[in-house]
Length: 226
Image (cartoon, rainbow, N blue to C red; front, top):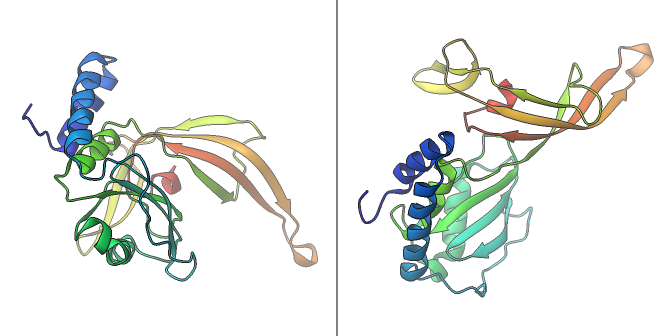
């Protein structure tokens, strides 16, 4: 490995070792990268600095946490990731300079927490965070309200592992759909609550399931497809 491994490359090594249950090498490499990150990153003070906090609902996002060169930003479904990054960059330019790096993503129309590194894509903080996401060391949890056929009674657990393939139009990815020979995908879920709503004037009732969902892989629209 080079003295400054790029985060995605390092993450691929970590993931391969994770699959093989060979943890000694990735732990060693990640520890060395962490030491370099803490030494070189200029945002390594453990005390949070004062960041401006835009009102949630006005800009559509809110900073939840800042720690050692990373931001956790809560966003609503009605703001694109590109717009979010531009607005965060404008708000924090006086604190962290002109560059921010997105190290996680959210599908369009999804609310949740986005992880952003304070620095360029080759900065220590971005590399270290990217390595953990690419190495599948980060656990992501979604809470979903699903309509239609039930997913089981409360407490039911399941794993969906149908391979996913892309559908395209004009060279743009529209969605991932279950398909034989598609890319590996794995999603786990636990049923937290079940609801039955009666339709108006005797129409058919509607069933809803509230589930806690964890995507093991990170394919586009994976939760929807599974």
